Length: 266
Ligand SMILES: O=C(O)CCC(=O)C(=O)O
Image (cartoon, rainbow, N blue to C red):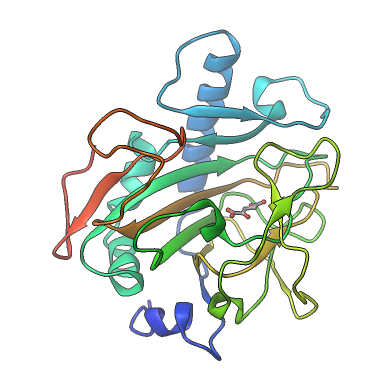
């Protein structure tokens, strides 16, 4: 697995700003994650306390029979066993060391259901959501749990856009768009490319890379699991570290690597 050029690939001009690791995980790994979030969705629907997980429903009216059919995303998963197991994989550690460095926290995790009929997320840069100091490097890992196709709403990326500053984002103008969706409207995205993935494929991308996903017009779910990482000395104005949560209810700063070694995770 080639990670030696990852820093350049993710951040330098004339580089794409992302790297694909095909067949990174067994489909079973993703299925276990899907089972776990399905149980959270069902527990939440009958009023059980699922904290610290944060369950976000879809705003669109979708068809379905089970609670998970109406969920958009579930956040704050990275301390749960099945997700910790993924982070313990030495290959994930290698990617993060190469992409960020030796002292790193995982601060965000989200399972994206993208059920049939769910709308895509418009063009954005993840750093728009991350007003941290230092602002970079921040890296996302996007694991395909199901196949991602043009029909079911795969990601689209704009190669090279990682060199752009964080652009102005406006609120998603579609009436009924999901909470928190914002959009870049003043940038040429005509050179975008779709990311057609198989279950277990892993995309690693810089937090300035412009990307979007399209609507799921298929009859099946398009699921993905996403983690974000930043340097351990990051200051998040929305969260009082080691103290009370002040504002952002989805970030959860978990120490991951110190001096290149993985910490006991919990
Ligand atoms: O998977 C998707 O549909 C969108 C994900 C995305 O844009 C993100 O994780 O920032």
